[in-house]
Amino acid sequence: MIFHNLTGWEFAAVVLAFVASGLVRGFNGGAGANFITAPVLAFLIGPREAVPIIIFLNLISNIQVMPSALPNTDWKRMLPIGLSASVMAPVGVWILFAIEEELMRRLVAVTSIMLALILLSGWRYRGPRGIAVRLGVGGLGGLVTGSVSMGGPPVFLYLMSGPGGAASQRANFLAFGLMVQIGAILSYAFAGLITFDILLMAGILFVPFTLACWIGMRLFIRVSDTQFRNYTLWGIAILSLVIAVV
Image 1 (cartoon, rainbow, N blue to C red):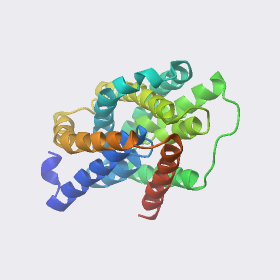
Image 2: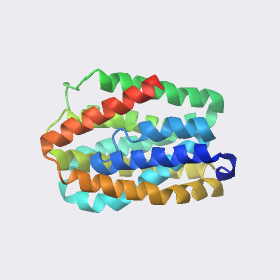
Image 3: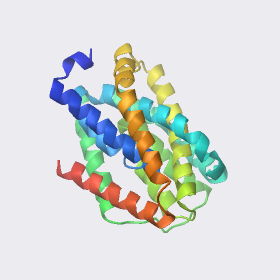
Image 4: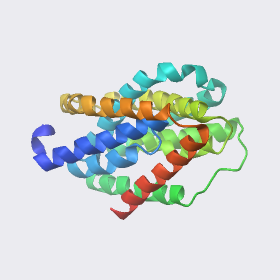
C-alpha cells in the first residue's frame, strides 16, 4: 500500500505539499498549485500513482469552490478551452501510462522547470484570442494535465493577459480545471489507474487539503483585483523558482 511505503518524514512532506497546494488553489483557482505536489509525490511514490491522486483531489476542491464562481464565469470563452482540454487529457494519460516510470518521473521534473522558466520570464501572451487559439491553449493544458498534472500555466497565462477582473479570471480558471479534471479522471479510470490505494491516499489527504483550500478562499475575498494579479503572479514565480532550484 502507498501509505505503508512512506516513512513518517515522507508522509509529513506529502501533507505539507498538499497544504501549500490547497492554499494556492483556494486563493487563485489552482494556477501553480500542482507545481508543489507533482514533483514531491512523483519522487516519493511514482508518477502513475501521484498524478491521479493530485487530479482527484483537485476535482473535489473544484466541485466545492465552483458554485460560488458560476456567476462570474465566461462560458463563451471557457467552453472551447475546457472541451479541447478534456479531449486531449486522455492523450496525456496515455503518455503517463505508456512511458517507463523512471523516465516519467524525470519528465515531471523537466516540465516543472520549463514552466517555471516561462513564468519567471514574465512573458505575457499578446497575440490573437480567437477560437483557434482557445482550442490550442486548452488542448495543450489538457495534454499536460493528463500526463503530469501541471496543465494550468498555459491556460492561466492566456487568461491573465486578457480582460476581466480577479473574480472573473479566477472563475474562468476554475471552470477550465473542472472540465479538464473530469476528462482526466475518466481516462485514469478507463486505463485502470484508479485503485483502492489511490482512493485511500486521496481520502487521507482530503482533510488537510480541503482546510487549506478554505483558508485560501478566505484570503481571496480580502484582496483587490490588482493585488490578486500581483500576488498570484509573484506566488507562481516563487513556487517555480523553488521547483527549478530543487
